[in-house]
Image (tube, rainbow, N blue to C red; front, side, top):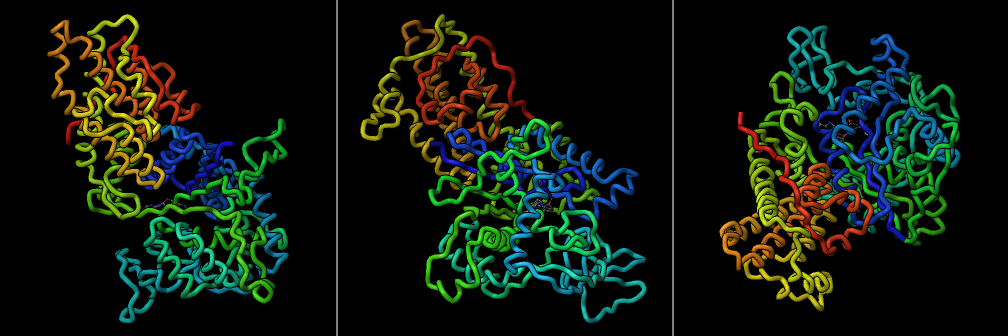
Length: 583
Ligand code: MSP
């Protein structure tokens, strides 16, 4: 039976077209998804939009549209971006959808029935644009005349001209006093601590996990989950005058997609509950991975497990008394939360005024999708804050893909064509080597005719690559592939097959050299496929491998790696990676 793998992006706020920060998140998730898919896992990948907010009503009114028509148009805009990049999501979740409403209402009712949700009066400042409550320390002062902002301090007082505003939206938050429902997060404090202790890999990287643990051990507060003043959203099943907002609504999208997957009945009305992908994980057959930016880490690492514990009855108050020492039930919880930092562009915050905004589609149209992906994933390790240096991005792409990769491929194709082989390129010297490839005990590199010329073995390369990618170390796995190509380039330069070709008695050796290059290129291209699926498909075609990307997506990867291949190269390859000039 195939293992199950489920990867998610956050659901993005619907307002505005996805920008490069969203692209970064989806791009990482897409690579990890593709990697798991070709590794023969029953994989799912979800993304979507977070729609239920009062802002939708305001914006739709401004545009003179019905709210749902307006949101439909925004959903189309979001999908357009992901489809342009060919991200392979298996489900696109909208929080206004019927299936999601059904899940959230069921969850809310259950948590309410067991007293984990209770009613309370709330008073505080609320920024509708952030969809969050604000404390004084979250705000800044703004001078209404000059529009300047500065930190709140005792020296300055609020006045007609000075107001406290949200630093991101420069708008004064509303003061709200209303009846709200709260989630009893405090009840789950010790349960959460035990969960963290038993699951040392729950948040990746460790230093962010430490922040989460420190936060939980210091202080947790019950949090508000509903709004009385909002009208647009999912109505609480136990109070028609309130809608739920933000985290109950947003986080359960991950469950919605598993519970009511995309299999609809013919009328597109009722849900067909396939098999509930989010199974109880006794047998460890499902791995759930959430990919997020650091700003929403606490919600995912603290609120989310507690909400699931409440909904799936993983822990009850009575357990305090009766079963305090017993093992807690941690099933139904996600396995890992992969978080990353923020980046600047040319060492400055991205902004229209500075003119350093990278809009993913137009940037990719100017250069190409591979340049953006390569630089974002290879320049920095994903968990640190970093900088997108636009010049370095071009240089990196030129060096790695346009020179290193493309030159090698082009040489292999042109020289093989010169041999004019009737039955394609194959070298039987590889026969034994194939059979021993994955059997450690039999592995005999003497079967590889160039063991002294190429320092690395494919086996070593593939194993290291898999180790990096299964730890989400995308940067190191890319670096490794390009180092491997360097090695191969040195080999070709040293062997000079173009010179050997002039001597008829050396043709067999030339075939071995060219076969080695093609074979090594095939291995690298398979490993680069999760990053650049479209281009790697073209590489396979250039190597004379027809329909190879489809095969990769549906066959067992390990078997394909050791497949015996004939390189039936008939045509010169189109330029797959053109070079770009620095501006
Ligand atoms: N809707 C919530 C997520 C709910 S998930 C259950 C949300 N949406 S968002 O559109 O604001 O952000 C989605 C992702 O994009 C987050 O992972 C966030 O880290 C990333 N970014 C959004 N703005 C960002 C920057 N300015 N910089 C870097 N990444 C940020 O949060």
